[in-house]
Image 1: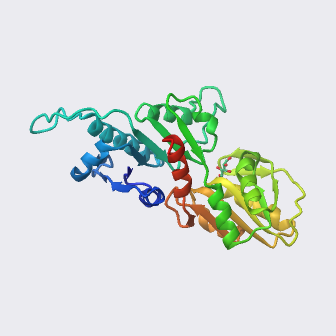
Image 2: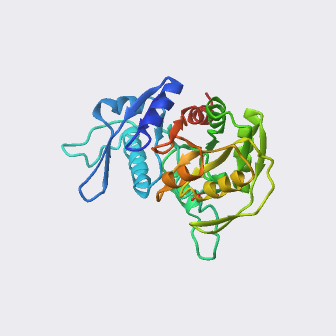
Image 3: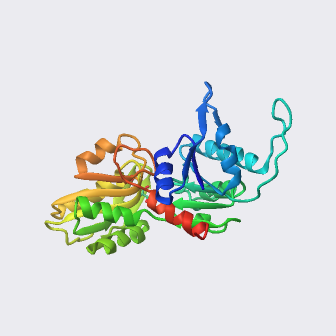
Length: 309
Ligand code: R5P
């Protein structure tokens, strides 16, 4: 079966294809001088995208990724439905091959706006989920911040996590003896890592004041002399990790590492993190300078679940 990528997540799409021993198809994807996107199914792949089910791997981040994802799905469904009307030079007859177009989203942009925090807001994660659901037959999403946001879509969704691979990577590199969740929201993911490694676990309570300011409630952690890894779904500005690391170091931690699935690393996050932690470990869901864990095995689990393989 073909695993298709556009301009984002090419490496991860190749990893996924490799995991499943399927073909990796690279779409033509470029930008016009004004920044608008263009995608095209290469002529030589039209038949294979019609003959079998297709999985498109595409990030919906940044905003240009949302448009590109929609264009990829549209171009492939046109090809699969034989919609060649308006094609310059005449109309070719092709049958509709039916459903079988799936979308794997390594990093789902807008996932943190998963509810209405204030009156008058859009639930952005839900809004995007509904749009994608109208363009494919199923979605696989990696470490979605709040899965509830996509739970009532009209198509099946497979929620997968890279935490088994995060645990494996941490165990083979830093050998942590304590895993910390920096807030209540990451407890499930971080405790799964602690369980896989077989080490101690705790969490902090975080209050976000604004996008740049967070406060952790003081808590006694038994980390004296320990190698600690803070595990979260994503690192954006690095503020959450830096604050949690300071708390750990004040309580005697020997080494502090940060691990996440999604390394957004915005606004100088890497240099900020380098001053507060001994190492940063992220997956390749987004291209980033600390990518050391493949999201391919997790996406492969999702494809198998969704397609009943
Ligand atoms: C929020 O709850 C997320 O799980 C992350 O903790 C948060 O997005 C990290 O953001 P930052 O790195 O900017 O503190």
